[in-house]
Length: 541
Image (cartoon, rainbow, N blue to C red; front, side, top):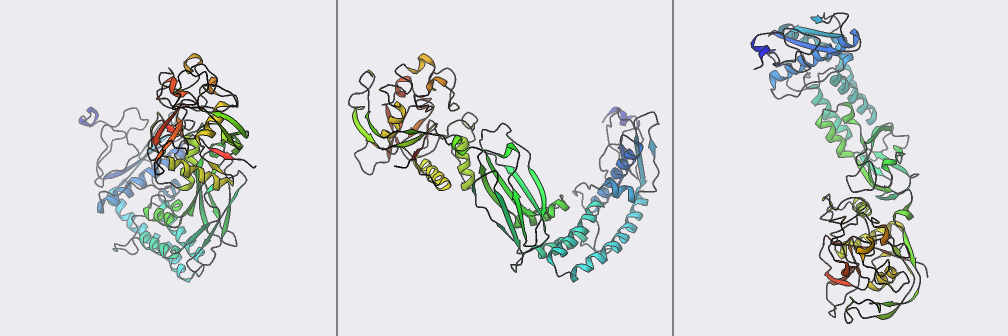
């Protein structure tokens, strides 16, 4: 126990609810401007402000909140602290006189107090007067044929109860156990039962100019006109390349028009562009009484949401390089002394034109896919800070995972994306040159060309393009090192084989493994920490 209490010295009244007995707060700080001795049998309220009027309003709100909380805890010791508006407190405690206040030359600070026995009597009278005020409003609800009018009437009464601090105190009748708020919440639940929200925009890519529409109908299919709705935008907790990792939610309230619809624009904030975002539209019940779990549940029951991604420049995000049609020498080049002549034997291959993605698919790009398809599981390393930056290549994806991504991107864009064959991968990596590595014939350790084992900069995957000297003649990035990349090719003679060739080597491999003609065979069902993928986009012939 603190010394100040042991000596029964004055204690500072803090903004806190007292227990019903009016027990004192212990160990109050001696630095507060208002010092009062608190006695048992009283409720206290303390406030400060820039003016005496502001301090008085805050102190009255504190006193009313403390007294109401103590009243609630007489019947339920675990009752939550009650909050009231300053306007309600000033109106209800208009005649109360200050118990203590600072001198005029000090910062404004005021303390009020009221005897508990006096408070109990006044609370009983106030409850009766409040019922008298609210009963006519509630009685009129039964005569309202319009659903929205009935809902607005209910919310008006609930709002009054909340502002007055009587939400969990006022009973329907004196001596009754049923709360006024419980009865109205039940009525609200019945009135909103069967609400149907129709979002006119499917999950997917959108533009900054996309208009989102939501229509609301009641259980009978009738449009709900003039219904207030909460419109909320938030950013998904997924890897992205955006600077602001956790931007604030964007929340607004909009009323439905004569057709029961609202129109919503995509956020202008740059924080919401080029990343996965969610639009949620619901009723506004919880906004009236944020502390009510019932109201929150009613909002969630009717809510509808959509998952979207807006790219300011889609072609830049999914940039490709066109590979011309024609023949090329697939396999080892003649001056590669480290190549296995049998394993990497050279042969001439002819290919049609195609476009190769500039980089491996990144976590940010893969996050868009997970978000829009509402995937239930993410790759194993999506929550690992060594691997999950938005501009790092996605890893721990199986061949099927990569193919599903390609199919999804194709359906979203109308373009044909797929995984490359090993021949397509090699031709793109060589960029028309007879070279050992994408950048030439020198080993990667000579000019710091790639992320490989012992590169001196990274111990896991690196951001795509982290090695400026690693691009090839066509500008393709990370064709060697960082992550090995899936192809659809197999070297197995078994038609049922599940092995597929991965190309390029990874951060776990040595310089020799980063040679263009080198390859590794991997079980296509495995998701490895050093294997990602790069896409091919088919071009018109």
